[in-house]
Amino acid sequence: CLVGGAEVLCDLTLSGFRSLQLLSDEPATPFDAGRKGINLSEGSAFLCLETGQSGGLALAHLSGGGLSSDGYHMTAPHPDGQGCLSAMQGALADAGLQPGDISWVHAHGTGSRHNDLSEGKAICRLFGTELPWVSSTKGIHGHALGASGALETVLCVQSLQNQKILPTAGLKVPDPEISLRHPDGVVDTPVKHILKNTLGFGGVNAALVLSHPQAGSL
Image (cartoon, rainbow, N blue to C red; front, side):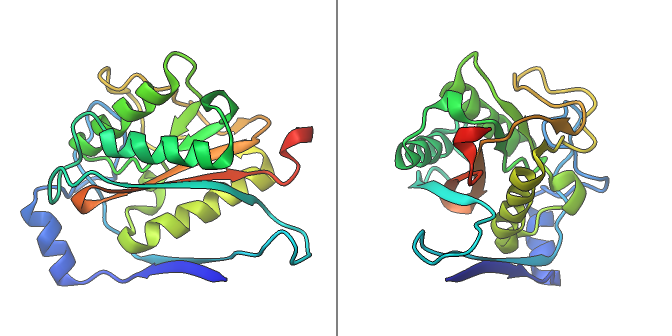
């Protein structure tokens, strides 16, 4: 099954986000205390999903997925991240893993004040004091909206292949209200399982667990 997403910017999209006062005139800095908003972008990414019986060398395993729809608000996330938390819990349960098995959380991390705070609270509630590395790559490629989930999933597959965890570009002063474990730079470390968040308007939340094909031997 070929899955993916594509996004092309248009004036209507830009005007809509501008009316919500979500756009930043500077590069987005997710989780930074001085973050000013998001950068919209365009792009596309596609992945080929195969069953375990299809043969070939898998680049990664889709170990689990979780979905939720909290319906809290048309554009704002639940302030305590309830929907995001539910999606992450569902993904871990589907994968048969515990929070401590996760090497990296690739956060949705848009750079908007409310989104980052809500997602940060959800991550802290899930992992407690035993936080894995947490970062967002949107400071590099921007928020590609309908393509962002597929695009960032490809980055997660590359992380598993190269055994590297990516930092949050532009993060200088972490928001003290979001007590996450931020990498200072690229981290070379065994990457067994990645929890990937993709969150959307209307309280639509998705989380995936992506695993290295030889996770047990890392």
